[in-house]
Image 1 (cartoon, rainbow, N blue to C red):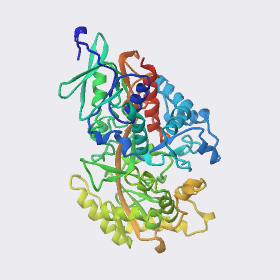
Image 2 (tube, one colour):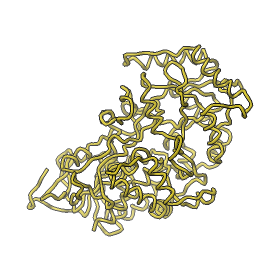
Image 3 (cartoon, rainbow, N blue to C red):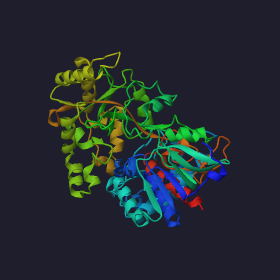
Image 4 (cartoon, rainbow, N blue to C red):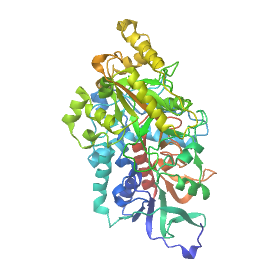
Amino acid sequence: MSLSDNNKEARYDAIIIGAGIAGLTAALELAKKNKQVLILDAQDETKVGGLARSAFGGMALIGTPEQKRNGITDNAEIALKDWHAFANFSEKDIFPKQWAKLYAEQSHQNVYQYVKQLGVKFLPAVNWVERGLYSGGNSVPRYHIIWGTSLELVNKMLTAIAPFKGKNIHFSFNCKVSQLLSSNKNIIGCQDTEGNQYFANSTIVASGGFTGNLAKVKENWPKNFSPAPEQILNGTHPSCDGAMHDEVSAIGGNITHLDKMWNYAAGIPHPKATFEQQGLSLIPCKSALWLDSEGKRIGPEPMVTGFDTNELCRRMSEQKQGYAWQVLNWKIASKEFAVSGADHNPMIRDKKFFIMLKETLLGNHRLVKEMKNECDHFIVADSVNELTDKMNVLTAKSSVKSSVKTSVNAQVLQQTLDDYDAILARPSSQWNDDQIRRIEHARKWGADKLRTCKPHPIQDKKHGPLIAIKISLISRKSLGGIQTNLNSQVLSNESQPISGLYAIGEASGFGGGGSNGEKSLEGTFLAGCLLTAQQAAKAIN
């Protein structure tokens, strides 16, 4: 939408579209420069902070005191090499590469020290995620967990913002932006769905990604995956609809790499859903067997959590029925099972250290019982036959909309479990299975050993009962987005900055329209929101 010069009325130094963690960070940094900032958000004030209110709160950080205390040698050079090994950048990815380099070089100062100054603390253990299947990935542990989950970061940010609220920082909630306003090729503000117009010297798009829009997820499904299944769970929120991506594209901004997504392979329907297709993203147990719809082990290479999430998603997309099963026992579940997010990690969220430690050491039976009681996709049984019957009842019930129904064969499932357990019945020197080898490798790192069972037969009665979890793909993060330079300025299709327009956080693909490339090292999202917001605030005069 264009306006003539005589209609232009800049009332703010900056307008920020979105009150997520990126938007809040940009507002805080601009307020420190005595700028007048208006934040517009489509949801109500109770949702301020966006997805960070409910996220787990892990950050990939480099060269931290926590790493050093754990005997980890890490630096920007090592991290950037790992980053590129997972990203698979092309020669055209000039801006994503620049953002990756910035992250590796600046995460300690501009993320770690920044949040520490806000009052955020991290758990002492550094976790080792995304190790890569054969090479690449995190060559060392660098996943730091916020004590209090990312909700703590939101609260600390709001505390820092409080002195500026009503003075330099102004909020307008339940305000969904639909258009950008331009004059003489400059972006001068925006308009909401009610027709209200807002004017500023700089407009910052901080509206998040598009993976809450499942139609858009399927439209941009990765080309190297099998076709998207009919049913995908929504692991974000319908408000993350990609509407601002479309609007930026309409005014000539470059949108890139929408086929790069950070979805998760193990989702289940949310037992207390507040919107359609809402799912819970599981952190799958390393010791669980991944089985197809008939009860056969997915192979030939077994699927194991913690090494390459993107590859798990690719292989889940190959499941013709659109789902798979994880089969395990109560012992494994109590030690390894987790659900991503703040709500299902209350001991970390609420900072109950001793209870968290007890559950880590003795098993999180509370969560397993909760899932058994609340979620029909979490099945518990005392025998393989009983487990099979319950699995098939669930499949029949949940496959009403599907044109093809497949049942688990009790004999097939029994043979699958027997074959695996037979390996574990031998002396450990004779264990010959890649999943067991990866479990043993994971257990060499102290933080993983606390959360990973010593291999044992799944049908071992003293570790029962048996558990089956019906899982499907669940959307999470969009790695691509609005292309930006290192000042977070939105770039045109000709790679030129669009005057007055910036994009930060997930809307910008965490920098450059896709700074992670094909795969994330995990934990780069919250940190990416902070970095891109800081860069925008520095650039706005």
